[in-house]
Length: 122
Image (cartoon, rainbow, N blue to C red; front, top):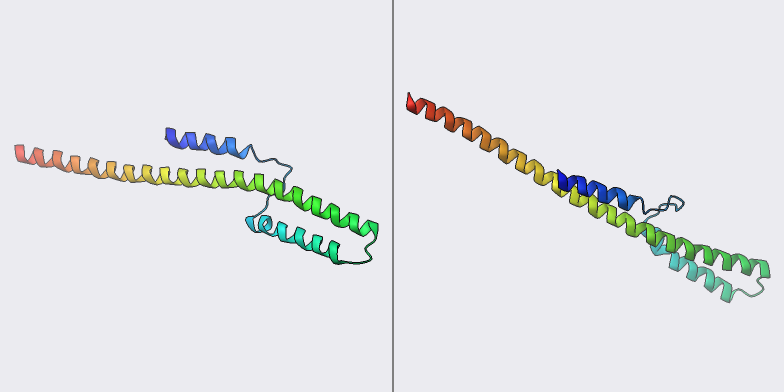
């Protein structure tokens, strides 16, 4: 149980690392950001006649996407740590349950042995 408490404490400490201002995301969103930035960059470089405001919007969008990618990278690292801790905690619970079952079986076997001794002494 001490090991499980320790894992709970690690998980809580890790969860506090997540900035509450960052919108959670998925790996697929993170993976798609580079191609989205490349698409905007391609359009910016190949479109003739872009107004200054249109180009500024594209640059702002690319900057925002880069910032989002950085945020997601940090979020996903922490999220993966939490998943690892949860998996370790599940393994500990499974091990504890196995030990409980073994202990119950041993207790039953000892009771049967005590009964057998009593009958043998009679």
